[in-house]
Length: 259
Ligand code: CAA
Image (cartoon, rainbow, N blue to C red; front, side, top):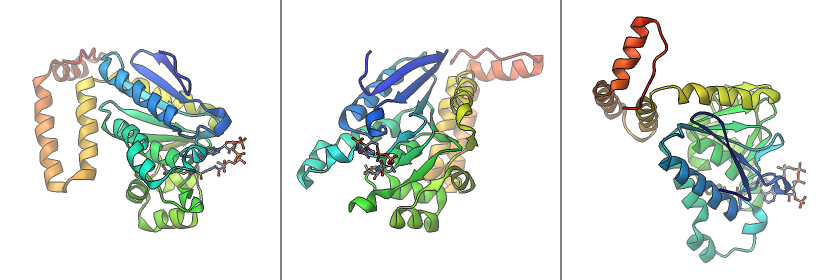
């Protein structure tokens, strides 16, 4: 399928690379881009050959936020009824396979929020994160106040959101917002390497591990640990567990079939 605002490739078996591609607007998230991203995720969810997605932008910008020019004249009623931000956000949040955000340059406003919706963020040393919506007289609208606070804590989140200051890659790594920082020319290699590793695992184990980490944000420790125990036990129902453990004992690479 041809997209106007995204470039979608399959660099490796099981790995889909999605590049946000509105260079004229630093990949600002407009309704077309968000609609296309939703279509890519729907197709990837239905395609069992897709095991993992890497979402990236350009060297200058992952995404500089929601498209301000598209939004500026909207009324309260139009914002409430158009729903394209929330619809796209829900698709990312509910996508069951892993999504890695590979961030270079600006990840601001909706761009930072989109990166935080992904399962983890690998940043280039040029990455800059921020929620500058207050400069525009608004607030983050797709989870920024909630997710940033969970990632970096109240003090840093308040500082960033109320002053609109950006966080560089080193601070983002120190604060737990990103999982690793790499030189900008290595960003895609590193993200694709992580994706290849995930694609080589049992897809059943990947699904359950992702659900369990997500549960840590939604539930109590006791409930989360009980859920983990149940899912851990249930993985013994699959051939992939037998194969994974037999391969370890036989000192060979496992051949997971996803059943
Ligand atoms: N929306 C629409 N267009 C944008 C944009 C955005 N969020 N960010 C950048 N652009 C456009 C600029 O208007 C400019 O277009 P023209 O050449 O036609 O003028 C082009 O991209 C290049 O941008 P700059 O010339 O500004 O580039 P710069 O290097 O000087 O500055 C920047 C880069 C600091 C990121 C600056 O572009 C900027 O501050 N962008 C806006 C960031 C922002 O406020 N994001 C939050 C948006 S609101 C939001 O996201 C709400 C939500 O939570 C859902």
